[in-house]
Image 1 (tube, rainbow, N blue to C red):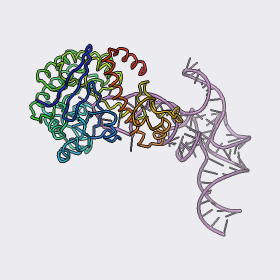
Image 2 (image 1 turned 180 degrees about the vertical axis):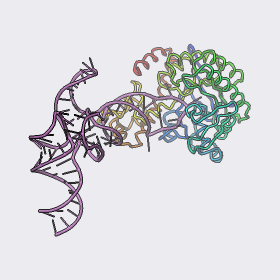
Image 3 (image 1 turned 45 degrees about the vertical axis):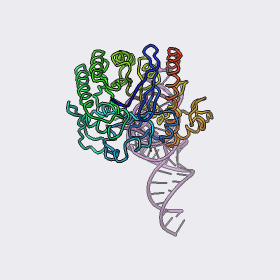
Image 4 (image 1 turned 45 degrees about the horizontal axis):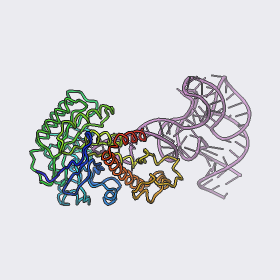
Length: 367
RNA sequence: GGAGAGGUACCCAAGUGGCCAAAGGGGACAGACUGUAAAUCUGCUGGCUGACGCCUUCGCUGGUUCGAAUCCAGCCCUCUCCA
């Protein structure tokens, strides 16, 4: 058994409030995890991430396996020490990269074979290789290598992806790993309820410490996304954490939580920050816009982040226009803090039974 | 004073008789972004119009031509070399 423990403390409808106990601390769920693919949340220091209230973040086995490589990570004493992050870390397996870098990948039941996007060499990546990489990293939460279907996908391909995802999950499960690390299975099946149900039930049979919903928010219509998500959580164990991979937008976070999801990750707060878009409780703003040129107010009035306490929209716009990297840092910090505040507000809304009003408000300001 | 090169849209810069409201950059303006090959990508950039289209614009003035950024004449300005 693993050390990881998820305690559901409050339930309202399908939504749950709880806490996830990891070897690197406790996090309140539902939780949003910022993404640091290459062992860094781009442009932000770990202590600044910590100050946003985030206590768990995401990194990536595929990218770190290729560079700097496992030996470097082992010598560093694992990923936490390597990147100087004391909170919890969840590492993605590389399943998403098998899809997103798909033009250089061939997939068999044995392995995904691909050309390294870094130096072009041929790399064979088996489910066991992904687990080995994540063991070397010392991730608190380890993800199974899965086959993520793009959208749209044929029924045959989606069925095959589910079959292979389950097969690879069994092989990952068979790898021995330290008790301090917990392995999550990933449900695939595109937008097909039948496949989702089958995949969820087969993974549940294997009794993972947690379960993820993968292959969503990859281009399907919103109603299909939400329907599939809500349908799938019904087939996952009540007491285990559910993690919706790669999501997402504030509207999607609300839907996810109301559908019984406990964990989320997304590049949106950080990528959008680098592109000038800041999230606020009143909607998002593009800080590059000329109308902010002389605006002395902070990104978000009332925000308690260290950026909003000290810097004006005017200054941040100037940094963007001038191409200064501090712009990315400042807006990234604000956005990550915003997502933490947003999740806290959402948890509170659920506790108070105010979740429907909360959802309406979020939909209104984010159109 | 002599010889040469050149003046094109916000900037740089292509275009040397019609397919030119004018390539390509940059900048400006706006948009996208969902398990990050992303400091990326897309749109737009003379005026009026929903659109067809019309009007004004390639240093200035005049000319040749059915038609001129493009050919001719004069003028103005910039740069390089020589004196």
